Each structure stands twice: as C-alpha cells, then as structure tokens.
Length: 251
Image (cartoon, rainbow, N blue to C red; front, side):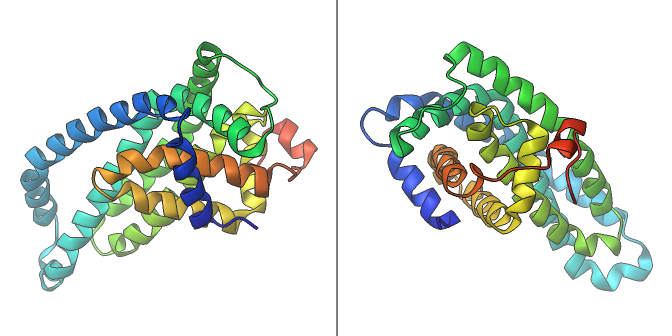
C-alpha cells in the first residue's frame, strides 16, 4: 500500500519530469505572489497583535505569560497557514485540477472519467472550492475564537493541527476525485473510511507547507501525490449511496 511519504516523493519527481514542468509554472508563480504578500502583512502587524493579546490576559494568569505568548505565536502561524492555503487553493485550483488530470494519465495510465479542457476544469474546480470553503471557514472561525480565550486556548494548537491535516487531505485529494466525477459528499465519506491515510497525507502536506520557499515547489508534488493515493487507496472505496444522495457524511 502506498504511504504518504512515498506518494509525495513520487509525485514530486513526476511533476518535474520533462513534459510535465509546464503545468507547474503558473501554480508556483501564484503561490509565490500570495506567500510574499501575506508574509509582509503579518510581519508589519505582528507586534500590535501580540501586545493586544497579552493585554487580554487576566492578572491571575500572569504567571503563565511565558506559556501564553508562545501559544499565541503558534496559533497565529496556524491561522496564517490556513489562510495561505485557502487563498492559494481558490486562485490555483483550476491549474491544480488540470495538473492532476495530466499526472493521472502519466503515472497511472488511466484517463480521468471527466475529460475536460482547462476552461471547464477551471469552472468546476472553482465551484468545488466555493462548496468546501464555507465549511472550512466555519470550523476555522470557531477555532480562532477558541484561540483567544485565556486558559482554554492551551488546546487550540492541537485542534488547529488536526483540522489543518484534514483540510489538506480534502483540498488535495479533491483534485483527482473531481476529475473522476466523485461528488464532494462522496469524497468526504471515502476520506473518512480511509481516515488514517487521509490524516497522514494531510499532516505531511501541512508540514511541507511550513517550509519557507521550498513549499512553493513541493505543493505541485502534493497534487501529484494525491493522484497516486487516489489510485491506490480511494478509487475502489464505495460510499453509502443513500447517505451520499442526501449529502450526509458518516462521522
């Protein structure tokens, strides 16, 4: 069975082979622009945010200030990471969907069920992003509010980490599944039934997105890795048709 590390390694080699490189240039350029813009924005406002955060700590928790401010930094980094992922996914989704289709043909020898051109792929990919983004945003908003409650926010970094891994799994595995006409509800069920593979892959992608600059070149490899995992782990998984028709995901 293909594991997350092997999938990412093989996927990265695949997208930088001759004939595939032209499909990764635009996504890398988009990621670079968003990355630089967001990094500059956070750096310019970090001191003010930290001062405001520490002013909210009640006097009886002053003795925990050594722990609270690092938790704030970690939570802020996770929020920035999530925002970066959301923005780049929305902008680069059309290119990633098209890249996933090319990788599926190159790596597996199978044509995607939905054989679309770039324009149709772009429209469909954006549509999927607008379906998933509100769900992610609601959960992220709840975690963000939790991060600002002194004392309770101690568990926030762990919750953010688990949530980020699940978001990454959904985001990247959605590309090959969309190309093969798997509905969003069906996809969530398939990921739930292969929850270990989903979380390990999502966690690994989360880690590589934290590597400055290198992540810009590894993200296309994550798209290709998701295609390989789709072919090995998820293609033959069948969801409950009754729940799928009602849009229900088993917990």
